[in-house]
Image 1 (cartoon, each protein chain N blue to C red):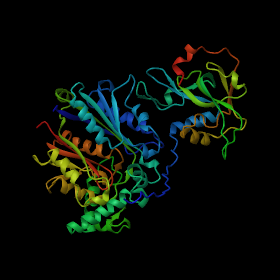
Image 2 (cartoon, one colour):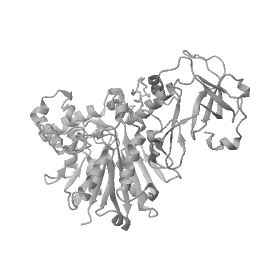
Image 3 (spheres, rainbow over the protein chains, first blue to last red):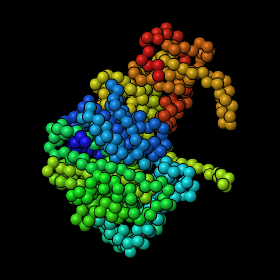
Image 4 (tube, rainbow over the protein chains, first blue to last red):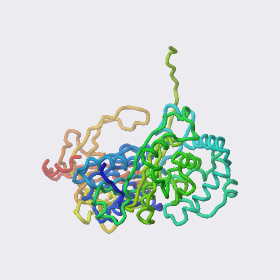
Length: 352
Length: 178
């Protein structure tokens, strides 16, 4: 396999001017990610993006977003109707071909345009079996929460403790929609949205955009003082219908983690795309993360869920742990579908 | 084997009308005054109308500093003859022309512009036209809403009519057919 590293990551500011277009959220973000490693759009050999037209209800909106990447003269590019983490996977595969060295990955979403994200995502992923019974991602996450609490003899206070920790972790993260000091008791005073989940158990959906630059081989060392090498990358999916799954576990995450080599040396930090609180418990177990692993030091998806960029942001935050904070072995995780239906695990290692 | 069972399920996914951007609001305000504005790319000089806030060819952002006024006269680059189907709510009864126009001073075309004051058989590519503004025009807010929904110039221009100037050649508009 060809060595490929993440050398740069940028995220659009949480605060945008009213009515800002997705293209104009992406354009400066992509410029920033490339400029950080002394590159321009001309250096990019392959571009891959992730987004979902269903979020805004516009057809082929990803074509407008491509204008932010610069598609003239014509470029080599692709798009996934998924979180940008899967665009990163495709870009990594493309770099394995060996003929191009630099790939640009970006993701964006404007969840604010849908009247109800719960409905929109249900119709996007399963209009036939789940939508007619109202089984949206929050309702299903609540079932998952009940299954986790019942199996592990945990209480709702355990869920609230996780949220309180993430809110504290998020202090200083400019892309966190919520942060600050709170206690489990304060959080437990809130009403249920769907029991056992309260509003704070569902990461606030925000409009967002992010960009990552991948570089293969020696060129990564030339452009970046501390690249984060992708030493493991895998994605797996559980059966589509939630009714046939044990919701308290995530076999797809377990397999993806094993294939990505998470246990071969352990990790210091894990950025997990747990959009609902119980998912963090399921993921930590599936990936075998012990108490010595720092989970979601950015606050994770519970403090901001930039839909379709959330997974790519987790990998970007993992990159920052290596690049900015000197960590040696970390992982970023992305998920798609209700109750962690599909999962991607990316292991990053510093130069040593 | 049991026969296949069918069920009916009526669905709807609701969206908010996109909030007009600050740029769109400004474009609508100027339109209400009869001024059609664009952004001129500081690198390649192409003029985008309506302004997008960036040049997709050079991939640079443009701002109010790059604002230019384009003419309210231009050229038909292509057109369609619409035969209105009669359905509830349809207000049109006769055939009419929707044209794509290249306004003087702009490098981008604007679609679905209503032609009037000319026989359909006389409409042609390359024909010179000018805007006819409504006597009681739509307000800036109404324009901004319509433009944000992708409806060209909102209701700021009632229709377009021939100027009587000589046509442009196919070669002169070849880069702007779509």
